[in-house]
Amino acid sequence: MNDFAHGPSTIRIGDLEVRRLGFGAMQLPGPEVWGEPKDPAKARAVLKRTVELGINFIDTSWYYGPFVSNRLIAETLHPYAKDLVIATKLGGKRLPDKSWVAALRPEELRQGCEEDLRTLRLERIDVTHLRIIPHSDVPFRESLDAMIGLQKEGKIRHLALSNVTLDQLREAMAITPIVGVQNLYNVIAGEKKLANFPMGVVAGQEQMLDFCAEKGLAFLPYFPLALPGPRKMVSPVLGEIAKKHGATEAQIAIAWLLARSKALLPIPGTSSPAHLDENWAARTIALDKAEIEAITAARS
Image 1 (tube, rainbow, N blue to C red):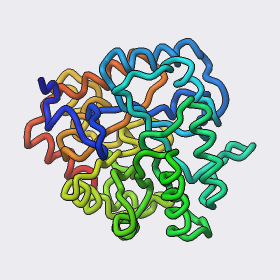
Image 2 (image 1 turned 90 degrees about the horizontal axis):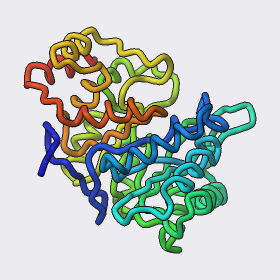
Image 3 (image 1 turned 180 degrees about the horizontal axis):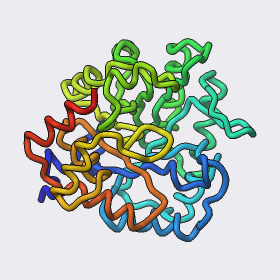
């Protein structure tokens, strides 16, 4: 039975099928995605509630914490349910000053993959994204070849990309199967707003999304509820529509993503079980055509 108001309730990632609303583990560690959570028991409760709700896709990385989100996932959910798909990403790392930097050299990607396997207690990772970090001097093909090597060794089941351009996706697909893309996309990140965004985020996401839908790839929108920084929605349109539906702006943001394309697999994160329930309930909100168009128009 399809309990999603918009589109199918599941999506395929390679030969895997998951519910079309996942969970992002980035908020499980402490502030600034660093160190232990303020309330470890609450973090574990979020993970337990995730699988209780029927969410069977979790996105994480060894450098969340670092190591914290992966460890919490393993401590709470291992041995994993057969239908639980865990996705990770490689290509970045954290420095002692809490900064985020590129780690795209082959030896760095291998080390990161081994850390994911170790901390998640896995022999093979279901989906691993190659995340391209701006200002890296490592050629894209060099990093991609390293990921293909890890897959051939049986450490990775499916390859995906993150923070890439459409040209990079096409280049990768000409070399090896790619199952998905994880790029910035949400209700307020229109093309004009992204033009001056200071994190090196690539533009052209409408074309990317349409391409993924055409080719049968999953598109995982990161920061699905807002841009980084204060978690405040900036479009008054969201508030008006939320009031009409008796919902929160965040729920409307998720509902719009689900309505925008059946290729979208939102992965909102939270450190609160109550907020997790709220996010999950957003799948049942039915937006009409005028509401969808109003939100879309406000994004520019």
